[in-house]
Amino acid sequence: MTISVGDALPGGTLLKLGEKGPEQVSVEELTKGRKVVLFALPGAYTGTCTTAHVPSFIRTKQAFDGKGVDAVVCVSVNDPFVMGAWGESTGATGAGIAMLGDADGAFTKAMGMDFTAPPAGLYGRSKRYALYAEDGVVKVLNVEESPGVCELSAGEMLLDAI
Image (cartoon, rainbow, N blue to C red; front, top):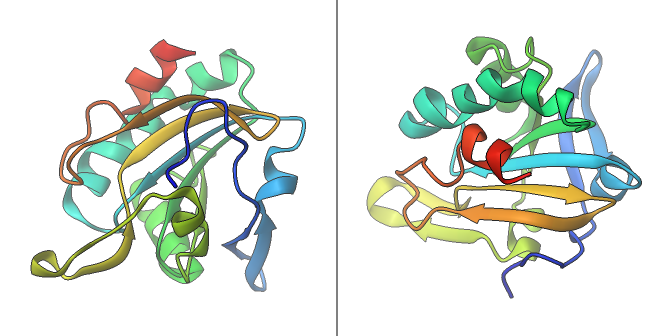
């Protein structure tokens, strides 16, 4: 079942690249008692993800901070090494965006946001979406119809909705 406004985010563990290697990040601990923006995308280093989606959240990060958002998080079905390198190369890490890998896709599947597109070589990937949650409950959810489009899920659109 696909997550909806009013639903609690599923529990799970994501991965980040720490100083000593991969570190587990509990979704429950990340969101408990906090205001969190989470955006997800089909894959690190892919076209629209790199040229539009991540930059839209880099541009809006300070404005989210100004609205009391505690964390801005990017999730992709990639390993934490790729997410760490991609965060550095795009400037997302420097902007304060947490780049988290859903290496086995379990969180993405629990969200009901997984898809497969064999012609593009994408298997078990995440749909493109952005959400705002308070204390782990989804308050705003913007999902793109096509993974190659970044309009509804852009940082500016989510910022305007909260």
